[in-house]
Image 1 (spheres, helix red, strand yellow):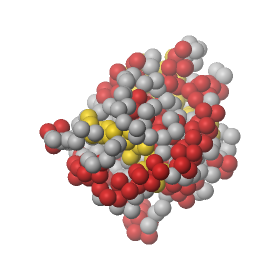
Image 2: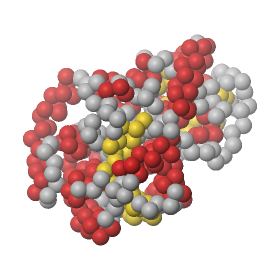
Image 3: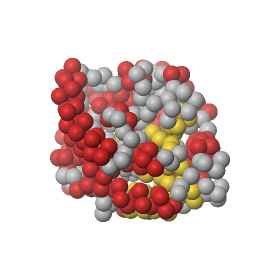
Image 4: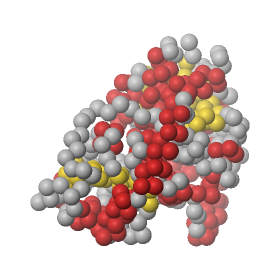
Length: 392
């Protein structure tokens, strides 16, 4: 039996793909401890892992909504949060790992404290990457403006100062690149297919492209019209009332069935006197809806796009972040969706009509789905982790 420790950030899109892997490892008789946050406790324990809460130690949990919006956009700010979190967890996690002596640490690519403690204590490490894997070739899909490059250059003195704080605590980290990206010597699980991953042939054999981890549907959706349009802008940056009203205006006079999931940040009383063909929910079982949907209007989080294409559903894409923009670019490259030039009602309706009436979007989604289904999935990810364990 191997002892395996997972680390993850408190985000559904990063946690969900790992749950099938955890279940597979536990079913094979291995011990799994999972360091995460109380919001994720139930789903992690349901998968069979022993849950360990990080909430009391993690500075990230004390961010204001305004601060949280800066993460991922401001390199210096993001680095400070990651370093603060790593150092806040340092004593507890290092003591736990030294006592437990795990055979392997599996850490989400954003949970850099997992990678950092593995480096510090020389524990075998696997990166769990729920976005695309990035190197010099694949990163070309992420379009970076001159202004963004200048901001990064200006922020480097602050970044390097925070890296020095890690070095002073014994972490063998030379630069921000050591914690923000993986090289070809890092064992890495990527939850997509080689065909969907940009430049997959440029990564070493230490990368395992296992395909998306798709859970079973837990609910049922009734399809009441010939075409079903599903809309969700994800679980994080979804305080988008004006955009939701554009969606309603776009489809109010159509014969499409529309299911709109808006999250918990917008009061439901803002959606009164809806047309009979449009239903608004705080949340839905996305897997159940996608099994019936004809097109998905999405923010293009990697998890949502993987699920959409797995069920052969083409996309209309409205990315909200740079990372989501990279995913949208890849979908566009492969012809499985399009991004409207504007987010007004007329542009959104035109994009949906285009996708529904152009067979190639559906055909290309089917091709990507076939590639996903050829991947080894959770079993392949578990095999990869066990090969890295000291006892294997």
